Length: 129
Image (cartoon, rainbow, N blue to C red):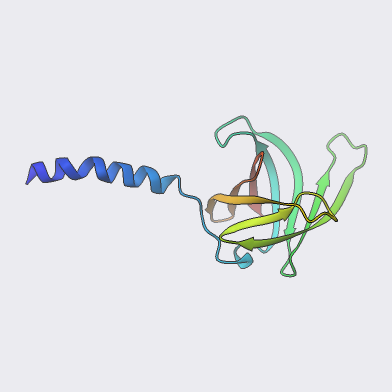
């Protein structure tokens, strides 16, 4: 009986390690609709976070309104509207307004009002407003 558990233990360890790092698959955009405070970004998930002041507003019509606040105060606030959609569980968002080039963002963590996205070059850390 103990030998049976000893053989299963390594298999269970691998299973739990893989499931802990699995991306979250979005069913559709209803899981992200509304305003989010993008408070930090980082090159690595466990890397040093750079504080930012950006608000993302995911609208049901497929528009993402981005409002960035300049901490130095030169431009105060900049608003940019881009397109987005959810496909195969990932967020696809325009890289530049007016261009039909999109980047994929995977939800790597989502619990309560917090969400972490892994986009092409950066991880974004958001809190629901």
